Image 1 (cartoon, one colour):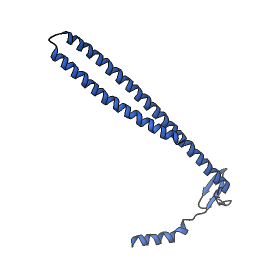
Image 2: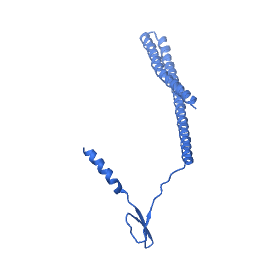
Image 3: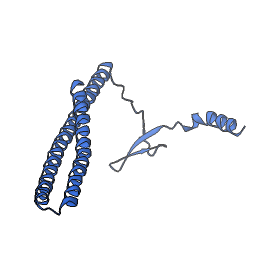
Image 4: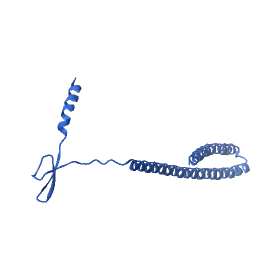
Length: 163
C-alpha cells in the first residue's frame, strides 16, 4: 500500500520538478538561475547532443578495433608468460639432472672405496640403497618439471593457434 502511494505521489510531482533556466548578466558576470535574476533574463533551453548514425557506427568500429587489439595484447602477454615458464622448466630439469648426477657420482666414489675395504659390506648396502633412493627422489622432481613443461607447451600451442 505504501509503495503504491509513493508511486502516485511521484507521478503527480513530476511536472513540478521541471524548472526553467534563466541566464542573466549582472555587473559583467553571467549568472544562471531558476528564477529571473534581472529584467534582461533570458530563458535558456539546453540542447541535447544527438550523434549521427555515421558517428555511432564509427564509434562502434573503433570500439571493436580496441577490443581486438586488447585481445591480441592479452594473447601475446600469455605467450610471453608461457615462454618464460617453459624456459624455467627446462632450466629446472637441467639443474635437477646435474645435481642428481653429481650426487650419484660422489656416492659411487664412496662405494668404490667401500668395495676396497673388506669390512665395508654394510656400508656398501647403505650406499647402494642411498643411490637408489636418490634416483627415485630426483625422478619425482624431474617428472613434475617435465609435466609442467608439457602443460606449458600445450597451452602455448593452443594460444598460437588462436591467432
